[in-house]
Length: 308
Image (cartoon, rainbow, N blue to C red; front, side, top):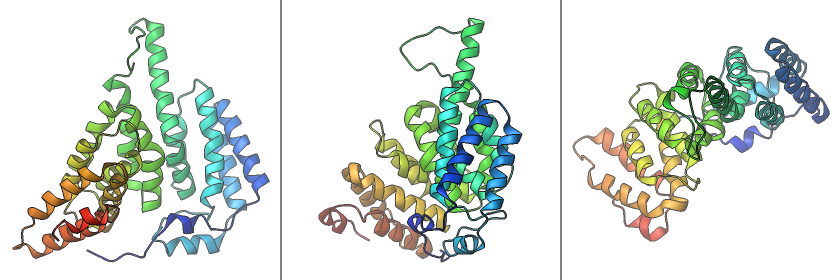
């Protein structure tokens, strides 16, 4: 397994920031432009803000945490969250399809816009579901009921966007912004629709495709409706992948799951340990490392009971 520079999202938060008043002004302007349906103007306003506050030192500093990308302005994450928060509030209070802004921001290729896309993804996706439902009500094709009103077809455009975006993640920061601020929320709310999609991603060969389910589990596992058994079945399809970002996401998910589902994680890792093929030294090493790092949040007694 190739080495990679250590990374910690808290360090990224320490980047130099634009003036807070200017950031809030840009956020309000962007939100207003979205509500008016002026998506090109929204992108232009955000680009102007990024260019004005370009910080070469921040861009260079990102590389120390393995955040590499083709286009970056060095804007810090808290500032991006301020803008994302304003956009999310606008998306929730209007009847406009939020997917339009996801596509517009993503297509710029700028890492700041990609991060914001991740932060607003869940609200934008739900706006598409609301729009679909409202249209069908007007057409008289569905009836209101107490159960979830979504249908698998409603998610077609949402999953199409995810499929389009994943190959262009470029780095772990964009991937995790999408997974722990967007995909996990959608998965928690619509497990029957999102679960099978995540399973499909585990069958893909791309590193980012396979990181997504594990990273989303790391974010989703604290939800009340989290299904630990189903999550471990997905993780099992990823275990053994020695690519650094898949491996790290798998162990991250296992550690986070251990906080509430320690028994299930212990039983899974114990079975995994029992199945190690000593004849395949490379795979055995990956499995042992997975068990070692994935069990770190288990109580010492359980952790020590797992053979490695």
